[in-house]
Length: 292
View 1: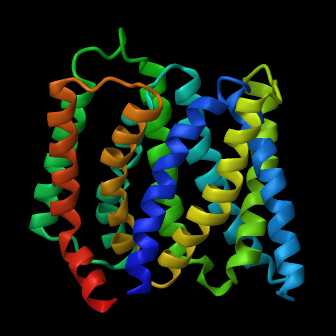
View 2: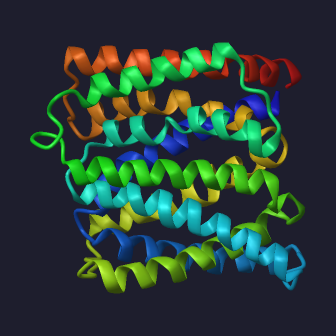
């Protein structure tokens, strides 16, 4: 039952990241903002590891595995999401694209993690992509920035790869130490990306301070810690199924907070995509609830 409550809390926290991220890129360049965030996050997780007397000096292979997860999750996933924001992509559309992760995870977890992908899941995959196409529509390249969509697809691939990698390799490390090495590697990676691919700047105004604080405390220490716990204690496909609730949750938040408009075709596409991912993952979801 605790896993079920943590799952709902994760959905709310994770969805809020798409909203606060929109505010952050109004006051800072995307990669510089993320570099700043994960430098702070890594310091705090190091502090937690010391306080709880976790073993920080571990096997080099384990460190390498954790750092790869950090680069994929924080570097490619969040870097892609934040860059798409800076290109003008909405929080709702970004969340929709990225949260197709359960579909890719189900496809890849079969050959990589030996988790069976059924015919029903393939049907769900079809509906998931159909819904995404409806939301993106024919406006891509005009109203919808093409480079923003591409960046979100990169983020999608990063999140999917990180989920599978985390489950396959880094389950032997404690959460605090694991998160320390992930955040540290992400900070270094994002610093390099910021130097070469953007004009770096951060305006420490009220909007930035409040938004980055929310992402550090609620998302990095809350949502991400819950995610790593759920991945560690479940299957990759089971955990990734939670993401099918993120797009509609984000859409509602964006409507209230950001004033984003939802056309009828967007709502239909969003519902079809959500239904598709639910179909693709309903078996693992029902097992998760039953086992809890």
